[in-house]
Image (cartoon, rainbow, N blue to C red):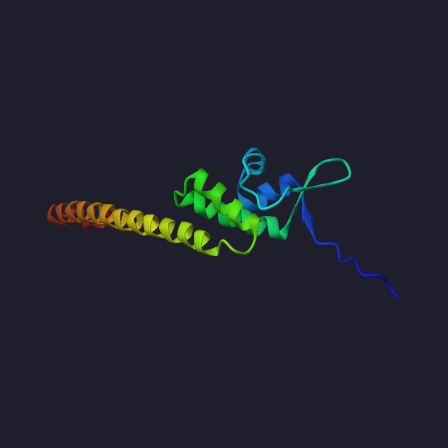
Length: 136
């Protein structure tokens, strides 16, 4: 019989940075500022070792930050998740409030895009009038 290695796959900080698109500095900041769900594991030599669970969490908090959630809210959300069951209402409220802000930002971005499209249309029309339609 052969033994099967059941240890979860882990990733160095460099591998994690490459997989997530974040810098090693940002990953250290996330850990230092209480944004991670747990203390990141360490190798025998003391180097950080991230798990697939860490990568999933990093993906979520990166998306929350990319959509404008303030660090304090991400930190609060992470703290609530770390606390475990019993605070789902507060977690849901945080996420729903953020979702509303994202929807408002999206609506504003769509308005801006409409204005840009209208301006492009004006230039296309002008160029067609002077016979330079091939430039459009």
